[in-house]
Image 1 (cartoon, helix red, strand yellow):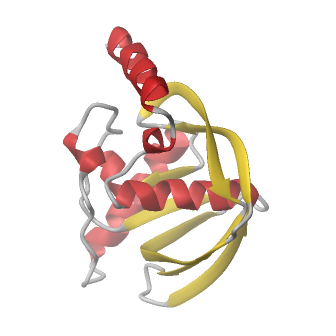
Image 2 (tube, one colour; image 1 turned 120 degrees about the vertical axis):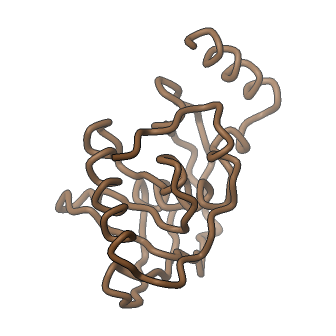
Length: 161
């Protein structure tokens, strides 16, 4: 079982690779991601947050608490309306930042059975999906705050290590 990766780590800066073969390893990695996300009481987790360089993430659906798997996710539409709200990240423990995100998104992805699906997400689920897709692109939520705020957060994290 992999462990959760926390800042600083090169994995958090890595652009994840598209998945071309849906193998048993992929399914096992998704199951592992679920365990880790639930253990850390998260609502989303990207593969690179546990050291896997693949374009996939999981998210806890708020309505029924089921876990949705997104393989090779692609944001096809974002709302032009934004919401500012607190956002955290398992890879940046005990940090919550005000982040501006689209209020809804449409995402196209595949499930573990290689079936394509499309979903429109609102509110916290849209926020979570955007956050996780950014991880897969090698970006973090720190890129949404001012340089001054980023330096402050990084100093706080470095003090805790």
